[in-house]
Length: 64
Length: 187
Image 1 (cartoon, each protein chain N blue to C red):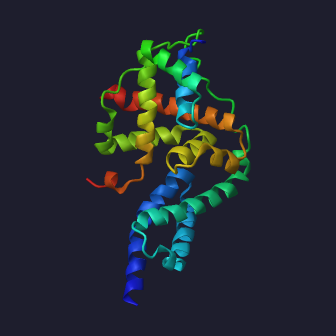
Image 2 (image 1 turned 30 degrees about the vertical axis):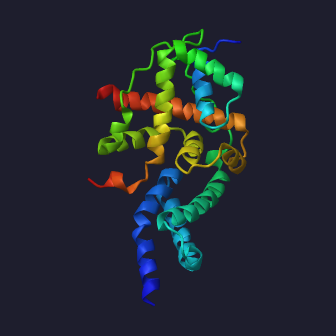
Image 3 (image 1 turned 180 degrees about the vertical axis):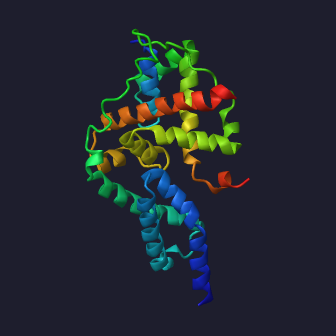
């Protein structure tokens, strides 16, 4: 199995938010995550961005 | 009829929310105003189709999304959005070493969801969104704010899925950096 670079990993993490990753891609991600704190953080941060942007127009944020 | 007036009032009360929703996507106050107006007219004309549904806001947002897509179609014909407008983009060379590893490892954001409770965080996020190039922002907001599938977005904008993924990747990486600099790095 080909090992991913961080650049390839971030690209794949992003695509994972937009399409179903193949089995091999998911395995490669997991292997890379196991050794790379930076990519784990970047992945969590991209998922957070999704939550934040989805909530962007929610009225609750305009109040208090 | 009183109930009809009630319905109209409830719909009107949601106008500010709808304006905000449309403005975030269209980045053009006049176009957003038009889309909301069209949606409200359609909603008031189609009151009967709302009958029995639980959530008025969800129903109205659904109608508005169609009107926004119409507006995007109109905007897409304008030269500003000609393919290639923001294609010569950053490939984040500065973030990664030649071998593709982080030049500087991303900092942790702790428990970022706490930021969602803070008024200033939303301003920081909106500022970061405004800095995105037009096409990148359009695709990203269609995906993450309006919740369209990537396939639908590609079809609407006439771009390949691969290109869509590239634009979404750029948007996420750029926003991540921007929020790091303007928000999380300062907390």
